[in-house]
Image (tube, rainbow, N blue to C red; front, side, top):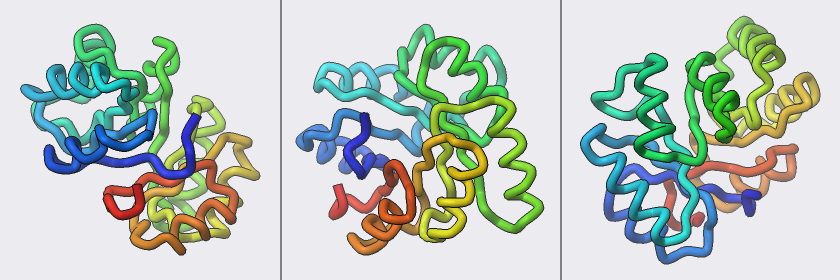
Amino acid sequence: MFNGVIPAIRNMKDFEKVLKTDHEYIIFLESRLSQVESIVKYAKQNKKKVLMHADLIQGLKADEYGLEYLINNVKVDGIISTRVNFVASAKKNNLIGIQRLFALDSHALDHNLKVCKKIQPDYIEVLPGIIPSILKEIHDKTGIPVIAGGLIRTKDDVENSLNSGAFAVTTSNTDLW
C-alpha cells in the first residue's frame, strides 16, 4: 500500500511538488476548512489518495459532524488523528484509520498501547519516529503496522526507521519523497 515514504504536505508549494511524484498516498497535515474540499478533489484528479490529519484542519470542529463532513463532502481516503473517536469512526466508515501517538514517556506509551489494542486502528503513527526500540515495541505489543513520523530528516532516519520495523515513514522533507 505505502512504498516506504508517505509525503506529508504542509503548504501548497509542496502540494504541487507531490503531485509530480509516483506516490499513491499523500497526507495533508495543515489546512484550512475552506480549502479541504478543493485540494482533495484536485489530488484525486491527479490519482492521489488522501489521508487527512483531522486534528490540524483549522476551522473543523473535532466532533462526529466534523468527521461526517470529511467523509461525505470531502471524500478523504483516510483519517489521521490523536483522537480515538475520529480513528474509530473512520474505520466504521471503511476509511483508513491512523492513530497518531506521541511516545513522551512510559505512562503515555502504556496508555496509548491500551487505546490502540481497543480500537485496532489500521496503522499507528509514532512520533518521534526516530526511536527504533519504541517502534518495534509498539508493533510487537499491538500487532498493528507502525508508521514512523516526526523528526524524520535524512535518508538514514528513513532507513533506520524501516529497519526497526516501521511499515512506512511520514515526512514533510520533500528531499526524501
